Length: 123
Image 1 (cartoon, rainbow, N blue to C red):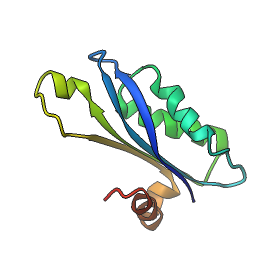
Image 2 (image 1 turned 180 degrees about the horizontal axis):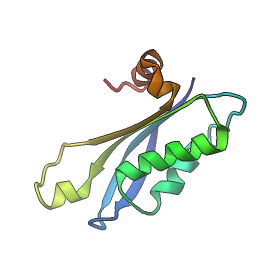
Image 3 (image 1 turned 60 degrees about the vertical axis):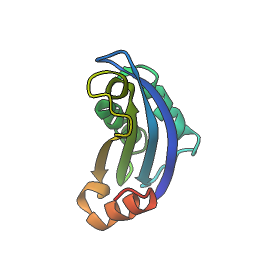
Image 4 (image 1 turned 180 degrees about the vertical axis):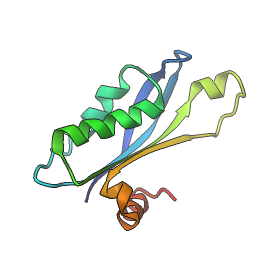
């Protein structure tokens, strides 16, 4: 299992044109190909540097890795803070939104998924 965790991301909410930011954790189980570790944060940046919603951002990162590497599994977890929630509407400062996409072995095998979540400290 290859994991790159705590990748900072910054994006703009396409609904409110307000920023959201946080940490992204990415894991994959190589089949035949591997990717340079610096490429994973670049993939996160590539998709986050546009008008976006966190749910789609999480899915697009997983799909990009799946397409490029054909791994046995891909897992992406994103934890974000949204200015649209902090500055308008309910005006709450502490909430974080967590989204995840589990593909392949991460979806099918609960022990593989649990190992990934334990490594990135998500309960």
